[in-house]
Image 1 (tube, rainbow, N blue to C red):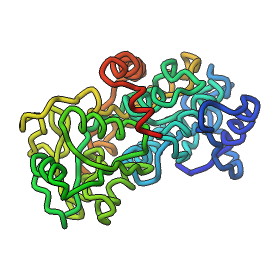
Image 2 (tube, helix red, strand yellow):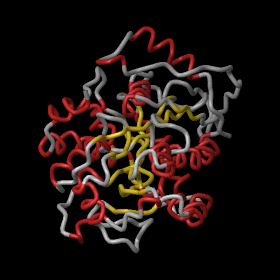
Image 3 (tube, rainbow, N blue to C red):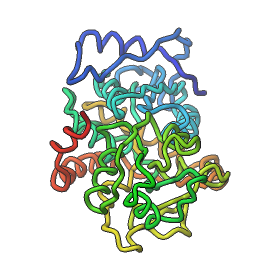
Length: 355
């Protein structure tokens, strides 16, 4: 069963109140709270519960999505959360806590008690980049990995009225001044970094960057014509492309997109490869220090969900790509982002451009 509230909201609020305010610009907020549903299921292990040891879990296991409802991360989590709930024997409520380029919700997860009852879903290198640009008082590098459930390619979609043929055409339209605006996710986050790197490395001469709270909002901005083009993951853009609400302008990773397999990546047009930025791993993680026993229970539940017939059917019906890698792979990807991004991106320049 999935709902959008739970008793853990009270636990997190009490913990965050004790922990105090965090980091620059007050990026970490508190989620709303509603009543306790009283479900104290024993999961698959029966017994003591509640302490990350034997019997875990005995209470709701909440997943915080640090993006708006309807975006790629939200769509995935709402599909597999009921299957995790079935495996764990407790509710798996979902809480959308968007803002600050995914740092608000991720920070709420990172500052929760390390008991396995509060998890977060984010997409390295996206949130690590946001944290590097806007350093926080919580160590994302030390997050407890639960599992990687998908891998997405970043694409560009355009409003059909502009009739943008491909990336070369987009390049020419910006160069001529025919286009000025460029859309993506919030300023200071990964998508803003992508736009700035494309400007520097590809000489894509957009004039003004417009940031949105999630891929759903970014795609909607292109649909409405608020921006002529917008960055999105391939999975989040798929339905709008299929419906003709937006045109697929470009696939950015050199390996292409499994969703848009018939479209060549921009590297085939001679543009530099930006794979360190434009290939996203979708992960579930928890705060540092979750006990090994609880981590393993959660990892196993996510594995069962992702390998289920239900998820396979959903993936086939929707065109979304699913996979599973363990918690260690999640931690490896987060660490790799912190090691690689500062070597290829001037974070001070990004901070200046975000102000």
